[in-house]
Structure formats: structure tokens, C-alpha cells
Image 1: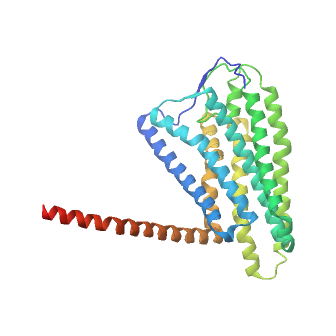
Image 2: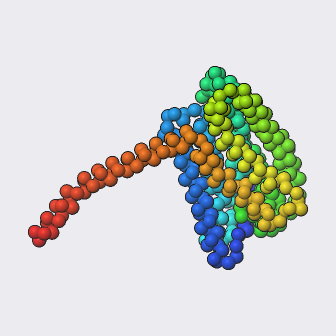
Length: 334
């Protein structure tokens, strides 16, 4: 990527100017980041640990948690460092990396939410053919296509954005947002806007309506089930995904499709926070609370880890105890 801009670094927007509020912002973002980190890592480890969760549904859920880890780790740590050091500078290459990773994460999240809707459709509408349709090869191909598609789209957007000339270095956002970079560009970003418009007009509506149609067939099949227990079981597997879908699309719609009259620095910060930070934090909470299989598997994994810690403590105690006794006797004799 050739840097044709005279700007070598950018200045990000901080959440506060006073030292007390900066420390508060650091503590709040640190808490949010640790919650997202522990929640998503817990889901990945739980799925890897429990053999009962080795199914297409949880394979895609592990990928979604990995996307969320990348999503929140791209922006929040830098914002925390800004509040802690009061240094709002970000290098050209670091800014380009942020743009690339944010677009990749958003695209991959949308792809996996769409793929998970198809998985639920096959599981509920074609249960007898589920394992034949959702075989290992198809799952790997869909996961690979989701990652590669998101990476290629992010690569094109990042290269086209950073080939622009920038008049100023001040970005009115707490991370390098592509739309904010267009605003400080000296050259008109017509190609970038048309590319984003084309993707937004094709990929996003396709995924949105694909998910809606999938759930139309799912709910049609659910209401044909006579047993209330059976309907409840089906709803319990669909509710977490449907909640995640609504959360992601509602925050994305507020961020990118709200009226221009509602656009301001504070609303831009709020929308970016909702879109970039909220889904990675809420997704593991939604799946942990609403999915009994994840909840039970996590409990078993915690019991296993606690048992391992007890065994390690016992081994260390048994190893060190004779040495301490010998040391005590030598000290007493001296």
C-alpha cells in the first residue's frame, strides 16, 4: 500500500479531557473488555472441551466468538491506552490495520449470523437430513467463505481509503473509522462511497432477507409441532441467535443509516460504541444465559478445571511438605 498522503499519523478523539473522567473511562472500558474477553474465550473453550457440542451449530458459534474477540480487541485497547497516557496519536499503519480489522470483523460477523440462520433452518425444517446436509465439508467451506469474503472486502476498502490524500489528521472518533477518514480527505471519496453503497445495497439486504425468510420457515414449522415441550425446545435453540441478529442489525442500522440531522460528535461516538463494543460483550452473555447446553457444558468444564487445580495443589503440597519439615528440623538442631 503506497502512502500518498502527507499525514504520517492521526489524532483520535478522546472521551474526556479531565484526568478523573479519563481514569473513569479507562476503568469502564477495561471492565467491558475483560467481560467480552472472558465470555468469548469461555464459549470457545467450552465448545472445544465438551464433545456433546461438536456440532455445526456450535462450530459456527465458536467462529462468531472468535470474530467478536477480534472486533473488540481492535478498538477498545487503543482507546484505553489513550485515556491512560493522554496520547491520542495513532500511526498511519496502525490506523490502516484498525480499519482493515474492523471491516473484516463486521463482515465476518454478518456472514456467520447468516450461516447460523441457515443451520437452524436445516435443523428444524429438515431434521432427518440435517447431518447429511450440514456435513463437515460444507461447514468448513461456509466458514472459509465467510472469513475470505470478509477479508477480501476489507482489503479493497482499506486500500481504496488509504490511497486518498488527507488534509488534516484529526479523526472525530475513538478509533479509525472509514467514514470519518473520508471526511478529512482532501480528494473526493466517490469511488469509496460507491463501493460501500454497492456492498450495502447487495450483501446486507441479501443477508437480512435470507435470515428473515429462514425464520419464516422455522416459525411455520414450529407452530405445526403439537407438543408444547417440543416447541419450547426449538425456541430455546433459536432465541439466542435471533437476539444476536436483532442486536447486530439494530446497532448497525443506527450507526450507518440514521438521518444526517441526528449526526453529531456525541451521537457518532455513541453509535460507534453500540456497533463495535456492545455485540461482542452481549453475544456470549446471550448464548450463556439462553442456551442450556452451553450453560451445562461450562459448569462441567469449571468442575473439571477446579479438580485439576486441586490435584496440582495436592501434588505441590506433597512435594514441598517433606522439604519444609527437613528445613524445620535442621533449623531446630542449629
